[in-house]
Image (cartoon, rainbow, N blue to C red):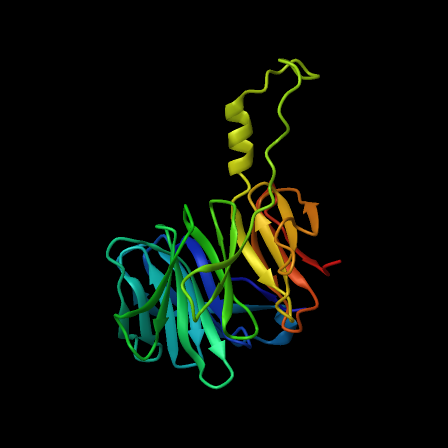
Length: 291
């Protein structure tokens, strides 16, 4: 086994993207830069590989998102810059997608069979999702407004026409690119039941503020989409992993409790397994097969 160790402490990372062979890793974060690290060859008997800094893509603020567009282009989002389209090899900005009164919290490509990845979605801290066209920098194609708080994630469905979003307001919304309205809304986290006595079993008084705080902690951090696009998994700050059927709006079909807030989800290429990152004492990553 080759252990790949990459020290990115100087970047103070928030997000990263890698080439398919993991020889190139783009890392961005609090340092307001995206740094490209490339793998340096070492003999297999050494048991590890090394990465060194090759290029730096400078931004004006915290970098929240990075997406690779093949080998030659890069899409990044930063707090002060909006979204930037880069010529990755020339380290040159070739397209700007500015946001004057909002910060981009998440970024996702919309891929269709006939056009490929020509459009992308951004979720902002103003609760608004925006559709952009890579061929028309600077112009918003359409807006989708309905979330009451930061949009934490946006994920396309396999059909290329629909997408889902998750927010700090605990809700998941289903959209169609051809309309600007919410098709469905999913929100299952339930506040604790109202107290039946002024004091619980261990002698602690439950207040209404406790109920509200517990409910708000179910903010959606990330969403994973099944191969068919019908099933969703959402990871929340209440340590819950929720399973949703898009046909059933009223309640999630299954819920699992993890050891800490579920902050990242990623489906495997074959969509048969999901990787989950929980934020607890060990900040662990777990590979699981959905039931």
